[in-house]
Image (tube, rainbow, N blue to C red; front, side, top):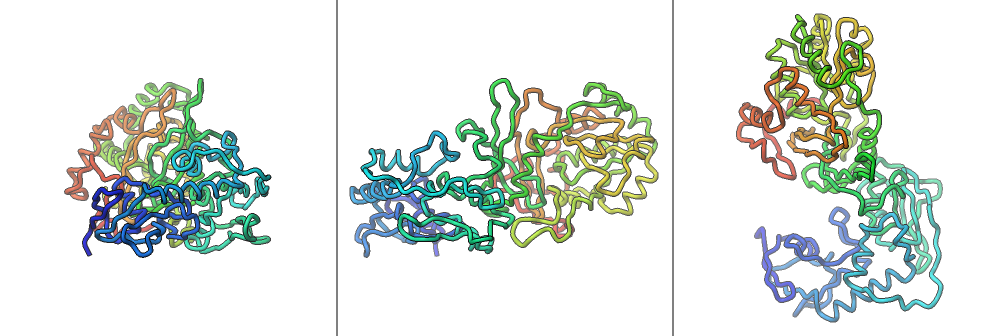
Length: 516
């Protein structure tokens, strides 16, 4: 079968991918066929009828686009009066009992029903009888709150729990005007991906208890990034807003489609890691146990590193590829041992066969490619000999280390979040977190991905690369680090400055040997 086929849409010939239904095929060339119940990950359900199209010389002449495969030579009409009337009629049907409370609806600004009304209907209601009332603020469990009166019965949420999580907590009960989505008695949503039904809901029926009424959609800036909650590296949108006279704040993470990493979804645990970006952040530098400014703390730590006889640099598996490489370069110039032991970041048995991984770090696979040892024996030996330990964003207490004892000989922490190691450190240098910085990570499947700066604070913290350069490192920014990485055998043939948006699957044999 050819990779592409030619068909006609409204009299204009277009070339579209072969083997897809009409909705996905013409969407690939920028043509929209309205649909409510269809979703690429859930398949065709055919219950909303918004996607009916006219096929010239077709038998039958009217077909649902979600259930019709694009075929060579097909002549599709989306603009005939017959199709326009069907779209208006279906919109009127969807809105018969739908409350017109858009100003207070959580979905306002990103609601399919709003968009379709303005595009395909835009006429006053003809209803002269009271609307059917249904329940509001129904707690479905797992952080999902349901407003039944807003539901259009697309069944996306029902199909998600049946087809994706295979837990089947949701169903449509009753018939006609009394039909509604509900949970089974005594069986609330209890799967680890439940909040995806909020993203799937095309209207304001499924809402997140955590995000509900926190922000208006049109105030939010949507920035592309990669989740650091585990080694899967799910693609996400970081939704954030800087209110007047306030700092930029993250309000939610949402999954971003990437077919080779996470598809359309992400886990609830990873979704909630946005709170770590807002809370428990390190802000005040220290030098020799005393408060200082960043420049003073960096200079003091630089002198301490130069005085050390056997310094140990411990690098977190959450550091970016560029940060790890910069630490290596600095360690080479000061004859420090570099180690990445961090088994405490692994929760054995916590992962599943979908997205969740046992390894709760984002970039462990980079250790093998960069040649950073992460074994416990080497770490213990280096720790016993070290007269200075510098932790780059890693909480050493996860390794079973008593950080308060290390502080006597010298413990430095360069990172973004407060933890036991940061509390005990005699040298403390706060740096920008991953949502405020650019970098690259390699996920558990060996896929190299970039992430860019999403959040810009009123008083930005320095990046870790800037701090490493201040300590004497030779790689002063992301571009320099990527250029240096491109010269390594592990990244031979990889243009580190221009990684595809969906990431790049590495074929280096070392990736297969990473244990997580």
